[in-house]
Length: 218
Length: 316
Image (cartoon, each protein chain N blue to C red):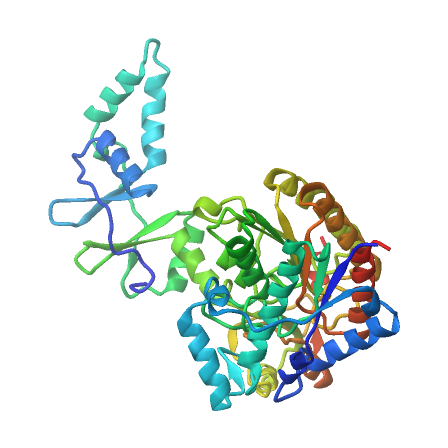
């Protein structure tokens, strides 16, 4: 978590106005800001959606103007609209924990707090996507291979050995269940243009290479 | 019949792989044989490439990279930067001569001694970046030719049509922020094929935003999808850009028989693409086309497609 979270966090105090919180969100291009007390302890979180929801009912009043909206935002403290029960992550949580938390609690961001409850970072869905892009090897110069293997120990090692025999680096590996029972699908990204001989060797070893055109069928 | 320059040099065969490799001198031997037997070489204008001047190479590549390439070749290294990109003792010189071939084609077309040019060069170029060799490429021949035309012949805007099945990441990067060189690429989708770039939203940066155009093709795509892309995506872009010369990064590995990719383009697809680009060149830039060989690794389809390509260029 400590490695993937953003450490340069923007915070506001509970007494800050909605106007100030909104300005900070725009300035730092973030959608939510942890709310902290004077000693840095997390007391809530406020999102741009919370602010919009607070202003909206006032907007229904006849004669409500842009100036009135600004006045409303300047006179309303963050603590009136913030979420007080915040789902947080700790420094000892793993990235996997963060993914599950974001998914299960349908959150966009998790403040990361230390043992004293102080905010030390924030991790968002974007940070998690970035980790996935890295793990999938997207953007690295490489070719992709998709191999279906029987679901038994040792097959991944066998494939890795075949690829290794071509003096080619594997830049990413992903292994998942295959639609067919008793099979797994292994995805490799390998740092070569010359993928033909590797495909051939894998097929000669008795494995099935998935035809890429099969992936795009509905 | 149009006058078409035939750029070739026997020394191109000196860049030989130290291990079994699809980008081998046999590709050019086969092309030479095939075009000779078809009686096409005698109908073209032979042009012998020369070693380029430093300035023409340095307009694209860093001095440090050239030094590194030269040293690696002299030292007897087997590969450069990545394991799939081999070199031998001749490779530095032959890479220069390959770029010289693209320059010779550009020169003949710019000076009007020919109408069009086909440069049967190797090693190929479109993966080579400013300071990195990869994907069998050492120097970026097409990029060097584009810069040569601008520097030596007063050409303003150049269009590069790259129909090699792999995305020309090197060429794209070199001209990413340059509004004077339009880079168009049609290639197999980066999720499935090397080098993993060329997604549809890669459109250039800064001043070059809008002069990069990528059209990734799903595995299994063929002539029909290529035709639609050329007519509906490339053509309007060319109408807006108004190039003065068209360079073609002509790879023939999108062919259904090629072992390195998953597309289904046929001989007729390459006839269509050549004819279409010839039409664009006739409309916008006085017919000026310089076609530079990139990939294509299955001898039979490579030679038959190049025969078609050359026949279309000859306009016979």
